[in-house]
Length: 181
Image: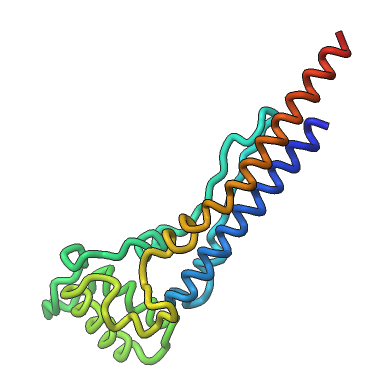
């Protein structure tokens, strides 16, 4: 019985974690942060349960989603302008690669756009003012606050439910020990 109740606790917490993950995915979509959908698929959870109850639950997100959540100050944008040295920074290379995914076009077109984005970001930071046209909710950062933190209160019912189940488990365990003795 104890094991069955712990499985119920695990299942309820896993459902709540799935709810939070879907809320995060919806917020990221609304903010316009979907190119291929791979980042959204890479948001995962892990729930640790032992016979004493839940020991922990975590949500994992790709690192770049944290950057999208917080934004980047203009002073931290790694772009110094066109140097004419012929080299290309990792930042510009990443923008070109991202543009290939979201937009296509020739390498020359993507380079031109990448340098324009970098110049704007160096002045404004990320997100740039021009990027807001991809948002349907007027936001381009703060997805975790909007999606996860604003929904944590919904977890109170699950937490209370798990406390009740844990009390039932403990009482049943005490009864079994008492009757076995």
